[in-house]
Amino acid sequence: MSTDADQLSVGGFEVEVVRKPIKNLHLGVYPPHGRVRVAAPLEMSDEAVRLAVVTRLAWIKRQQAKFTAQPRQSERRYISGETHFFLGQRYRLNLIDGCKAGQVTVRNSTTIDLYVRKDSDLAIRKRVFINWYRQELRSRAQPLMERWATEYGITPPIWGIKRMKTKWGTCNIEARRIWLNLELIKKPPQCLEYVIVHELAHFFERNHTKQFVALLDQMLPQWRIVRDELSAEPLAYEDWGS
Image 1 (cartoon, one colour):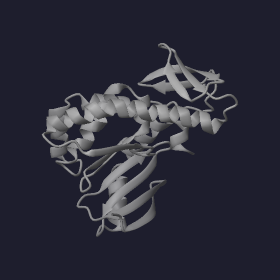
Image 2 (cartoon, rainbow, N blue to C red; image 1 turned 180 degrees about the horizontal axis):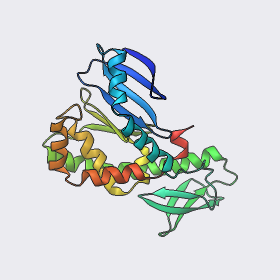
Image 3 (cartoon, rainbow, N blue to C red; image 1 turned 180 degrees about the vertical axis):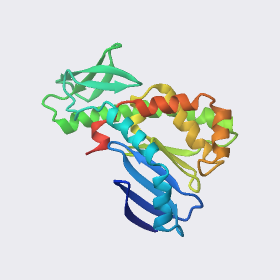
Image 4 (spheres, one colour; image 1 turned 135 degrees about the horizontal axis):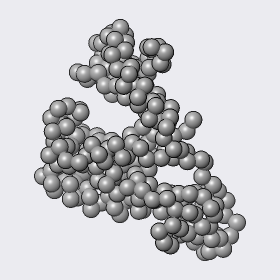
């Protein structure tokens, strides 16, 4: 649990600093605009944090450039003609109103049909579509979670789905709970598998240590390729804000 938060200006960047009871400093750059965040040990001084950030300025600029270059979806209205992503593919949405209950079906390789009651407003159309996304992600994640827990030799953890702005997945070791980002249903199927393998690895290594990386190498040798593919996918308007 963090105990302190601060803002530092380093090399023209505003850096969010959160101090935690950890041993090593962790630096991250987050979408959509390359926000810089540092998790630092409680006893680490501002100057030590500043020096650590300065040594990574070139890397920070590269990460921010990647986010700038990434395609972004505009705000979704859930009407005919919009582009929506599902399992890494682009689909054209076809709105069909006048139905008794909300439903979503993938008609073919290019079109998704959204069935709603007549005169349904944006909130209803969005809810029907997001609920479908959630059901699809759950049906695909469940067998993967069970399979990979078996590969690791552990009991499948409790897991759930929610929207997260900066993470594809999180792991609470003490509660033995994993959260998956709902956005994963928009990404290629191998991205979901990678995130599950990654989060399960945290039950053996809490932090991203050399041992953690070695474990990923053992379990999913191509994980770096999939990670880079996931990072290059379009960012969603509704989750990333301004």
